[in-house]
Length: 272
Image 1: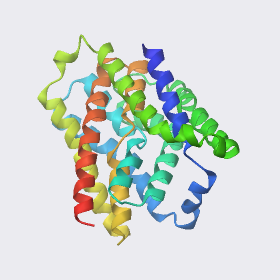
Image 2 (image 1 turned 30 degrees about the vertical axis):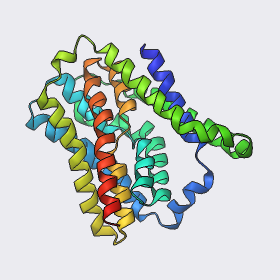
Image 3 (image 1 turned 180 degrees about the vertical axis):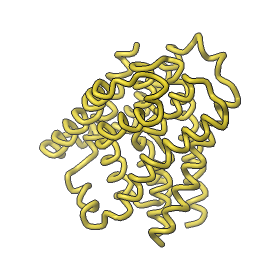
Image 4 (image 1 turned 90 degrees about the horizontal axis):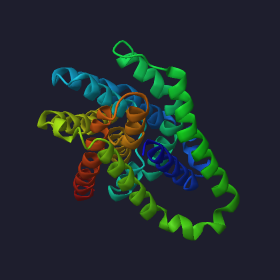
């Protein structure tokens, strides 16, 4: 089951690559400010919030590790959909998701080492290699295929969102099955902690981005990108290198952030 989850996430990363073009990254070089702000918030704010909340809520070691893994992950694929629904800056969203995903192979192991290296031994290089296989190679493959055969895969790209949703549901289901003996350990305290992590990500990212831009669309994008994590990646790292129990925060997050993200889009559209 663990290997199946890894394969499914690799497919998700490949699907993401199929929706990318080299031109999507041009905006980074034209106006890099908000991309840099978004990436800094992604990899500084979310891990810090995860650590502080875990300490405040006195979470046990496995759950603390799970929270940090969620905070150290890149932006989630669902964030692009939410940005579209919220009438945010979709180009900025795609750029942030793409770059944060590629950078996660290098940055995520460092964040994990910094926050939980004292708690448990971290095989930094092994995690890096896993992320290269999970992210860099599938995304690059999808990007290349889209670049050379874009016109020939148009139909397939139309049904990609449905396939991606089914894949995400399958990943969540498999993680829940792996944790079937640990489900009674999920407390309201853990659920509140995970929910606050996401909600505070939205709030702080939006407020901080107001310092750097007057563009409401860009503020919304940064808030969504920062708050909506790649919880599938966090769950796989948890199961592969730590414990199935430490994947529980990622499972809760994967369900909750889609709910909160959708609520955010409703308010955003009303205030357009």
